[in-house]
Image 1: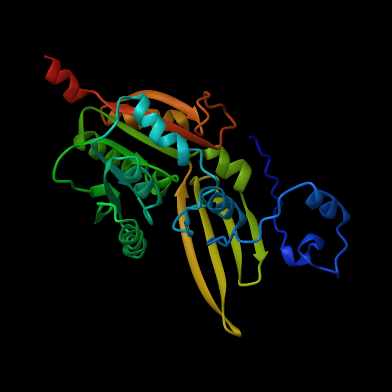
Image 2: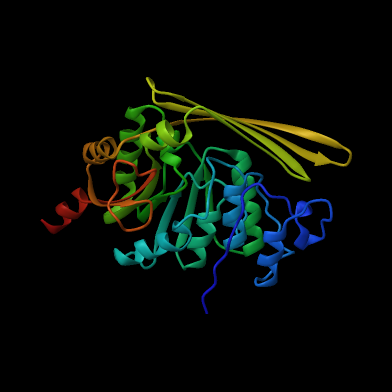
Length: 306
C-alpha cells in the first residue's frame, strides 16, 4: 500500500470546515477530506511546523534543543549507513546528543550507546527517555571540544548540525582530532552540517512567527556575511491557564563549506569516505543546504596492518 500525505503550513484545524469550523469557508479542503483520511489524535510537541512534521511521521518528540529538526532522512538512513560500512554492533558515540532522540533510535537498533552533550537540561530529558525505554545508555555532560571517553568506540555520529555550533574553525579540527583519537582502527565518523549557502541564501535575515492555541513563537534570524555567523533568537510563549509563560533562547552557528570540512578532516587525520547531499546518497552541489559526511579512522588501521 502506498499513501500520499499532504501537509499545509501554518493552518490551525479550528479554522477548517472538515474539523467543524462554520466561520471559515474552505470548499477545497472539504472536497479533499471526502477522499482522504482525517487524523484527529496527533499532537506535536514542538512549536514550529518543521520539527512537528518529524514528530508526526516518526512519533519521536524532539523539542527545540538545537536548530530546527525536520523529518530527518537520518531517522531511517543513519543506521543504514553504519551497517553499509560494516558497523553492525558495538559501542557508538552520539556527539551532541541533545535530548537523546538519535541515541535512543540507535540503541533500539542494537548498538551500545554513549551520549555526550554540554547541556544539563537536555541530558535530563534524555535520561527521562532512557528511563521510559529501559535502554542501557551512558550519558556524559561534556563539551565536545574536550570530551573524554574511557576507551575507543566503533563509530561516532553527530546529527542535527551539531558541528555548526563550533563557531571557530580551529575548534572543528580540534573536535575531529578527538573523534579520530577515540575511534577504533578503521572506525567510522558520520555527521551532517548546514552549509554556508543555507545560512546566506535560505535563512538570511528573516523573522518567522506562528500563533497556535496553546503556544506561540517568534524566530528572528540574522546572518553575518563577513563573520559567517548565523544567530537566531527564539521567543516562545506557552499557555499556562489564562496566562502565558515566556521562554527565550539564542543560538549561534557557523556556516561551513564542503572544502573547509574536508580540509579539517584531513588535518585531523581522518579519511574522507563519502559526501551526500543531505542523506539522499547524491553528491552535494553548490546549492546543497545540508551535507552528510562519512569519514574513517585510518592511521591506527595502517599501524595495525604494518
